[in-house]
Image 1 (cartoon, rainbow, N blue to C red):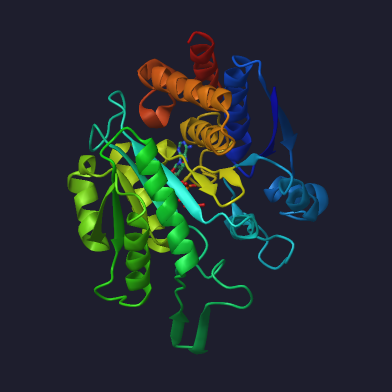
Image 2: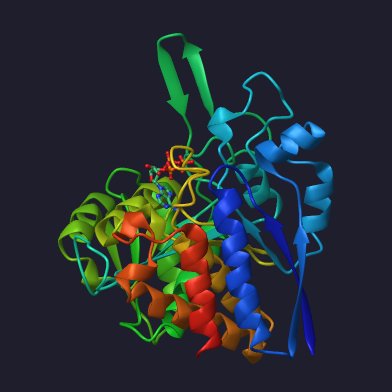
Length: 360
Ligand code: ATP
């Protein structure tokens, strides 16, 4: 009998709709495995937390997260937070950094029932999460962006052996687990960033030596961006640095039907966080039409990750049930939300997945 503790951080806007639906779906799958118990722990974050207790990321939330096996982080609408209040911070970079979540794992899968640029796409991009060009997380103290004069801005990029090695290992392990091409492609621009991308590719190549069963190759980022649009089916696992990954994962989502179809997890040596690629979508919040797919599948990936790292076959089987339930619903255009061409509500689509899981 295994017991896990999983946090629920709903976030803002459509997060208040898609996160509870995703939790319901995971509960339906776990109910099928009575050997597993999950204690679900609601924790305040985002604008609702700011209204309640004056902070978008209370210390109590950070403390509680340290004792959990994993958590859902709903989308954060930080652009709408008050600009002049230091307690209205964007929680994203702090969570990723404080819990050392080095790898952002973002799969892209096409579904025959969903209108998309391409079919038969099944790839996953592993993006380094905590360094690169992102000034909100790539420094211990201080800013990596500054303006020596009002007419000149400088941005610094950070690449380390440690994080490059971590994302490379994440990618190779994923390629081993997937029943696909057994291939990892490192995306870079070492023709120009000879030191930064040079180090990244060198480390990926070194790590590749430890996985002789996996084919390793490299591709310049601009060539990859073009190939991703023209022939995404040729890729299996892709590993890259922070900003390239940020851009390319949205591009990948675009070729299979949009951001509603882009789940993800952030993982490090110790923690896992389910976090969809999409933002808080304030334009559709409160209307019950947000697509819960990405948040449900982010939760599925989190369960799978915990199951694998704890060697718990029951939990991995529960995660598999979520994936199969979602697949069954995605095959029926009447059961999906309007962004996928259906007429269902967020809750309705979630309930359809729960029913599919109960019938597996
Ligand atoms: P951020 O910068 O915070 O990632 P963003 O600027 O990329 O956010 P989103 O909030 O992701 O923007 O929204 C982009 C568009 O995609 C919006 O039109 C939004 O309605 C739509 N969208 C995002 N997520 C979903 C979803 N789950 N279901 C349906 N539509 C969505």
